[in-house]
Image 1 (cartoon, rainbow over the protein chains, first blue to last red):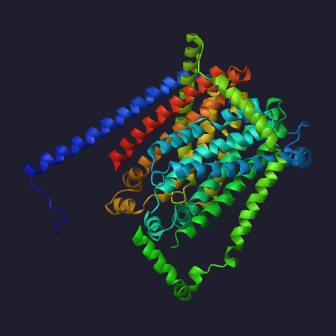
Image 2: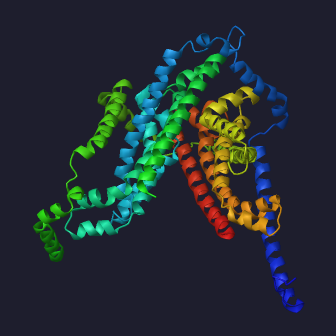
Length: 294
Length: 288
């Protein structure tokens, strides 16, 4: 049988093989070093986080039995045997959940408008003055680095309990996060159409309206939808610090060990979040499909 | 400028002819825009309804803003007052990083197998992968703070509960990510390995892994970054880290301490951002 691969003579082959094994060895050394560093970091952080494997082992029963208790009514019966008793607070929880969704919606829209206002000056191709862009970018960075719940804590102190501090906290965080994404989208546009509009004497506003907007709109909307999903999750816990939504009832139920209430509310939250994720994913796919027709 | 003005006048002169030649491009008409306008109107309607339902009024806004400005004034300058306080905060920050790192690694290690189960091109059984995917979604839709509250019931107050909480919420997200990375992997390198006589395991090791690993490692770094943010707040419910100090200082209205703590968080997050960006560049660059 004829050989498919021609093998060079040994004298020629030796240095090649040597080089190969050297390259492989270097890569292996790098990998080993990386793994060793990771292991050391893990050990240090395990000490830092006061990991107690023994406690975990002894009390892991608590974890399973916690879920067991979550699924029991006060009478000791399983929750699904008496849905009416399980969801006794359905009206109140639905109202709170609706409030949660509204908080997320209002915050997302407000934040998106804020992000738009921030993205225009932050984009290097639309804003000629570098200093303004720099300042706006740092502001956006600040807004997205401080966690929303920290904003909520401070706003509760300023605005009092209620939905308003929650909306503001989420809106500010959204402005920061979307501002960055919007800036990236606007910076990546094709400048040809903008020059086209400019060359026919269009004003700056006309350039933005007819050259920039058509290029970026579907991307912006899809990012805003993604942010809405995230904000719904955020709005469920923002009530923990007194900023409205279903979180305020949830934390009371968890702290006071009203097990069946906790599971009922958690179930409602999970289903709502999943449905919203699904709807928004479908919408985003359609938007992107409209953007890039096959 | 004069040239563009000439062009503009030329276009305006020929306006009527252009309209006649491309009627559907230039006379859009309101009828096509009705669905879009209705959508916008609906969106704004819900927004207004939200403002009313949530009892957000301009009066409330303004009085609150006044107080917020007062608070902002009290925050300056950021000041921990004593060195022992500063060291305490530094320790808490270290604990936060430890929680984030440990939680991320644990979540990744446990999330990976679930990701394999949820990937369509690895597990052919539809029921299996649907089940894996749904359970990942369920875990993911519970917020880290809720997980923290649950774990506190199991292992007690402290940073360990925080690490476990981060692990739990990461597990869902990372599993989803792994399954997506696997599904997006190109089939050809695997076929190449198989056609050269490699076993199925060889195919995964030399055909699939080199494609997937750099993506996953760089995603892991992203997770670590975002988990550091989560770990800073997890202390608010009592699960260790700097959040505990932060919520405590806000409760007793020590605003200078609050602003100092926020500053520490900002610096740490920025430093991590920078570091992980460089690491990511090194990892992706080396393997590409």
